[in-house]
Length: 116
Image 1 (spheres, rainbow, N blue to C red):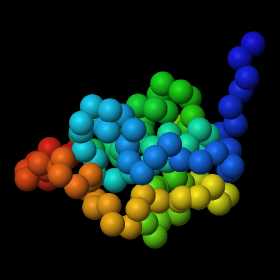
Image 2: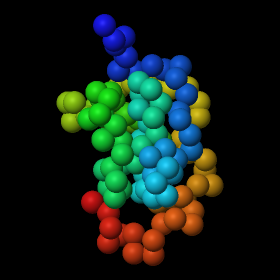
Image 3: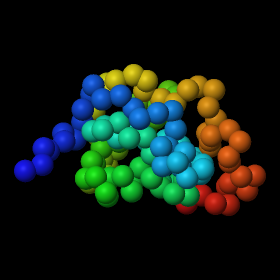
Image 4: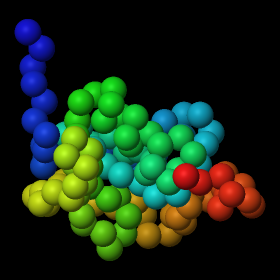
């Protein structure tokens, strides 16, 4: 039997400074979300690839936290509502000097036309 991963694992660090799937494909994102169970950093649903919600559908991990500087809210994809979660392991956002949308150098000029 597979081990069940809790919805929130406060001690698990994030997987990086940006969307790991966009980085692997050379893509870009609008904003970032952090999986509260495994630390996976994915792009938001306004982003072209919507990797954070795809991670939920593929992994069953329902709760994410914003990975934007100054934001600490959680979202539960299963209930489609905000969630009150604990403080997660640092860092709690991408670097302050990383732009949104990002990453620097990969965002097309017409990015507003490409978002959801």
